[in-house]
Length: 252
Image 1 (cartoon, rainbow, N blue to C red):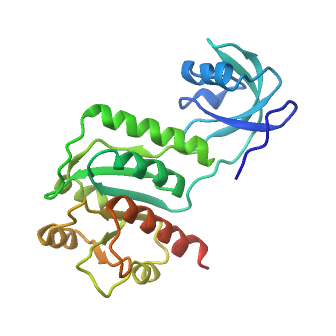
Image 2 (cartoon, rainbow, N blue to C red):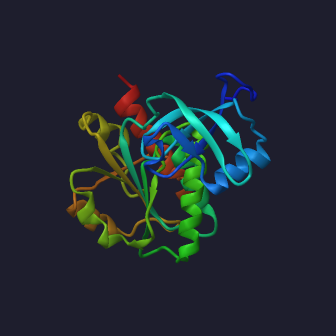
């Protein structure tokens, strides 16, 4: 949806991310990078209204009172309920090659994923550096701003898959796998219609090994099919996340 043009007196046009705690008071000062963007790129002026959110669910409409590249300040005029995904979705992603993880994080954030967990698997080739993780976190923050959600997804550092399983207890674990021919993701979701936390496990370009699938099943995972077509690793998780949100929150 296109945003309305900038203006004064209550027209809310832009979103800015601030650290947790900033919205506790009535006066808000944007961080340096956000201030520069507001003043130099967007050329906002005192009197304009923006939305400020802290990435953890707090959100407010703010009237700007001072604008400069060094600091942009404003006052809270209305606190509002932020937009949060109705189901907590964790996307466990076998680390793909190249920049594919960038797209996964960006579009996954727009779909409603709450947490991204890159994992090192038997067939994963990529071993991303720490700088890549920081890039993914910046992408998640930017996508949250663009999509209008009030929470910024958590992006974990890559780690071996086997270290993750104890953390997933209590979550409905879905494992799309080309070796599963009959049990669909939708069928499993309909059997767990009350699930509030769902984990989707997507393999890397080479897919899951049978050993990884067997291990996942011992930890409660449900191997599922997403349909007759073979999807790329950067596509499968987004499709699965959209299906989860539809089945658990919109289908009824």
